[in-house]
Length: 510
Ligand SMILES: Cc1cc2nc3c(=O)[nH]c(=O)nc-3n(C[C@H](O)[C@H](O)[C@H](O)COP(=O)(O)OP(=O)(O)OC[C@H]3O[C@@H](n4cnc5c(N)ncnc54)[C@H](O)[C@@H]3O)c2cc1C
Ligand SMILES: NC(=O)c1ccc[n+]([C@@H]2O[C@H](COP(=O)([O-])OP(=O)(O)OC[C@H]3O[C@@H](n4cnc5c(N)ncnc54)[C@H](OP(=O)(O)O)[C@@H]3O)[C@@H](O)[C@H]2O)c1
Ligand SMILES: *[C@@H]1O[C@H](CO)[C@@H](O)[C@H](O)[C@H]1NC(C)=O
Ligand SMILES: *[C@@H]1O[C@H](CO)[C@@H](O)[C@H](O)[C@H]1NC(C)=O
Ligand SMILES: *[C@@H]1O[C@H](CO)[C@@H](O)[C@H](O)[C@H]1NC(C)=O
Ligand SMILES: *[C@@H]1O[C@H](CO)[C@@H](O)[C@H](O)[C@H]1NC(C)=O
Ligand SMILES: CC(=O)N[C@H]1CO[C@H](CO)[C@@H](O)[C@@H]1O
Image (cartoon, rainbow, N blue to C red; front, side, top):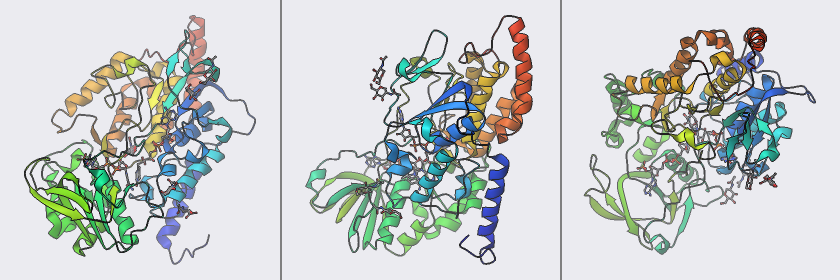
């Protein structure tokens, strides 16, 4: 260790706790050369979620194969593709995507994240189980109900984990007269090495990427930065305690108490810049941005945050219709010309498609994100779309839930008495819709982390056959007991002429 623990007691404690978690909760990597059995699982995508899910599967003795569309350099998914100017906005304590992860500090940068993913990948022997440059175009079942990826040349699988993420290609909307602008135009993910010193920068878009571009501008000492946002989003401070408290709203929606955190944010965080805080929607409706410096930069006069619509471009900059607070997009405003030397498009990313799944996964009204636990298409209990159906949420991102979702799938595959039938999965979705009837968003379009934990708890508690799996599902420990019980049941099933493993994709339980 290259630092003195006495001088950094909190960092030391953080390292010690992570070390302990890893010792207690990381499943053992497979011994090299060992033959792993069925059920065998195909993981689609080698980002943080895919690698973590595959490490969990293999650690619990299930064979896996990862298919990644990109080349080897894209191991780590989105984090391998964005530029050096990106880093984690939330505290890394909420970004422990596998128990083995060891963060050295609170806010790792892009390279540190990619290197943690790569280490995990190597530790669990996933190197020889990953196929790069193989995009999955289609998955379907053979007559025995086994999954085929593209065509039979890849073999057959019993379960599918789709981990395609939510950020695909950089989104560069075409805007009227953009080619007139004589400066450079970059996407926010392509800023490494760009020069902004002493220049005026125009950022289009008002999401997390815009905030990052603003940080880049400050770091590069741009002379002035304009952020042109067409809608208001909540910003919350970069403080792990506040972030965790907000994710503890178990109802996962606006409540009669939501005004309290909103008022506190306005009074103590926005303060004189209260005009930036949204009034047309509450905090518990969308993913907030996590940043504490934006406000300071605006107060210093280094940056200006403008609400309005882009009307067009000139050689020098952008024609912008500045709107007052509360005026809807496209509504009346004051037309101004914002001059700049460079434009950064912080307009987001296209969503990767899941349409390689069988068509019946998208049957309305049970199309994603309206799936069982948001992640299992009700027609297919052996398909887990891990962390890629979410729309908006408050609370952790690449965390504990990746393991939990993976282990729920492993439970469904191992134990037919836990595998839900389509009917019951749809009833759970209906129930959640009723419970969230008064939410301003769709039931599954917004959730909080505690709500997610409640979903998991309900899933386990509802079906007594799942009780024995509780420790395993939540913590990845205690697999021995449920396994022995299932083995005994299997012998019984065999006697009555029914074999486990005939069709992993058909649920018979509730
Ligand atoms: C600039 C930026 C900054 C971010 N910062 C944060 C942050 O600070 N905090 C935070 O919590 N989150 C942040 N995120 C969100 C981030 O998306 C998630 O935290 C996480 O990295 C998602 O990982 P993933 O593995 O689910 O998806 P990805 O990393 O997107 O990985 C998906 C992989 O699947 C592959 N794939 C897709 N389709 C197919 C197919 N059909 N066949 C085969 N392979 C396929 C893709 O090539 C890709 O490699 C940020 C995102 C961006 C873009
Ligand atoms: N370090 C971090 O925490 C971090 C950093 C970057 C990204 N991320 C994550 O990555 C994901 C994507 O974030 P993002 O900021 O890149 O994208 P985003 O959240 O989709 O934001 C895009 C912004 O661009 C605006 N926009 C899009 N198209 C536009 C158009 N044609 N004209 C004008 N404005 C337009 C959007 O306005 P509307 O809202 O009105 O559509 C929005 O303000 C999120 O999940 C985010 O949390 C995280
Ligand atoms: C990104 O950062 C890494 C490590 O800090 C460095 O090796 C690399 O050259 C940087 N890339 C660019 C394009 O600046
Ligand atoms: C699926 O087919 C496409 C197109 O033929 C190919 O590019 C891709 O590599 C294949 N993927 C797998 C997993 O075989
Ligand atoms: C299966 O698909 C792969 C990749 O697309 C292709 O190279 C191969 O020839 C196909 N095999 C069969 C049996 O169709
Ligand atoms: C999954 O990933 C996204 C980012 O891509 C994140 O914001 C979201 O909260 C994550 N969690 C879940 C449970 O989907
Ligand atoms: C990882 C990554 O995307 N790096 C890019 C950063 O930006 C430069 C210049 O635009 C590209 O050349 C890099 O490939």
